[in-house]
Image 1 (spheres, rainbow, N blue to C red):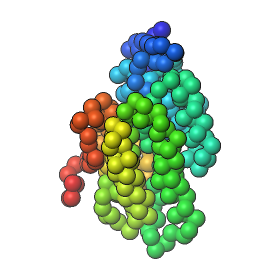
Image 2 (tube, rainbow, N blue to C red; image 1 turned 180 degrees about the vertical axis):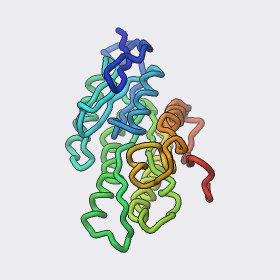
Image 3 (cartoon, helix red, strand yellow; image 1 turned 135 degrees about the vertical axis):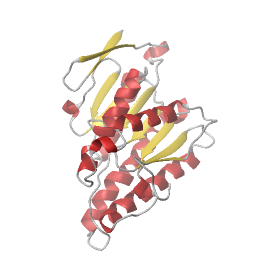
Image 4 (cartoon, rainbow, N blue to C red; image 1 turned 90 degrees about the vertical axis):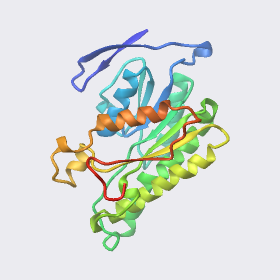
Length: 255
């Protein structure tokens, strides 16, 4: 069977992707789950992987927002504040494809709040989405990742490596924790061959960045460039394990 990639308008992008099946209905193609795949970096990663012959399972709050469709694409409802949606997404992915080779934690929020102004509710929501949900989702997916000696990519931030402004303080706390999660998973997967990498970009030309920087989008790192890096990490063998990749649109003071 063959699919064509669909662009945002539904138009075919032209490249044909053949989906192969092995014994027991398990696809012979690699499979990745990507959270927050409705737009921005997540959508770029999904497109890159499908164009490269992967099957993708896309988790998003509004499945109708997906830019991709076809036999190699599964779109599921996923809400980082709803643990049941995480378990259902993993189950649906395995039911559809029979395997899981990559898990990309891309969903997240970026409030502009200092640690002096933040209240408990803001803190709890931020950590629930940016840290607790990726941890739970990995727990649900772990048996399948271990079976495939898979890869985990956590979309952290350079804000998880340093704090550059008061307004970015609360967000930075969550991203420091996300980087810590990536390293903790790295240790958990050492013997099983599951590798975990934290991707730490600065501003990327997305709607999220547009709300916090006045830099023209053409000057920023493009979502497609981050997708190229994620694709590389997912394809690397277990003997080429990368802990972190910092990315900056220009020259970062520290990285």
